[in-house]
Length: 395
Image 1 (tube, rainbow, N blue to C red):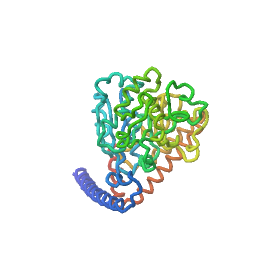
Image 2: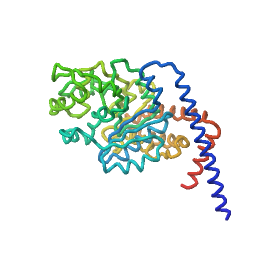
Image 3: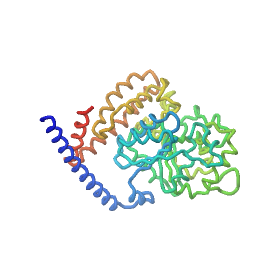
Image 4: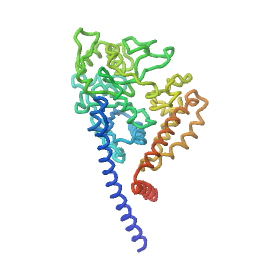
């Protein structure tokens, strides 16, 4: 009888704190909205942000990318303080797995099927990696979305998503997309040594992290080397593929390089710390911004999360994959200690020697999150602590 009574009282207490949390969260949301409306509008982007504080992120997943995508999603919510909305494009057979897994995360999401123009669907789908070229058609599919952050499945956020989202406010009137350079050091650059097609700038751009003002992108007429007439986005893609398909190696990324080679004024280039790859440390550190401020976004391209070629990258991936974020902000510190221990075993590699740059930003994100939690109303914080202990009791 005592056992049933304790369970009943526990449920009552849990419900009580849940109601307090809901009302507190609602009040906080209304207060934040009022404060936002009082801010001076500094740009067109800021004006639109006033009505939608969400960060909009998109990812494309095909084949054995479910776990990697979920780990990326987990990293995106660990430190984000503002609402997120994810647009997940996946093969139909992955939809149920995504719905079951993502439903426990604290953000809104929409799952889409992979969609290409019917007349050339097979050609687009097999370009480079399966479904990778889907990102080219996001502005045409998500017509109601004004701005979007596209990321590859092998991306890990080491700081809040809203920090890169805020770069939209740095756009001038000509900018419609933002990406990082493919290389910092021309001596090891790929495009400047091997490309058989036009590319952006000195070393090209990498499309693994791509921030877009899609309204501008849909409205823009793009200069090109196929016709003296400027073409819209939906008009330029297929002719570009037909002209260069025998000369491109990296698929849709190469097409983006060609487009922005002819329209350089439309691209905002952000530093390499927003898209930090093994190329930035494999022969010694060559990303100066990361050396100064740390790595903001980690990009484990070429499958380095799943082999032993770059153990420092794999250590970060495994730490985030294993951390239990079901409590959201309760258990962040459980990430740092095991990760630091793992990274200490990777110092025999160049990237391992630079792994303190991974921890630098991660620690700042954890500290910032602690400060944010300290500002939560007392009964809300008590609810979060109670929720953690309640769930832990059943695991």
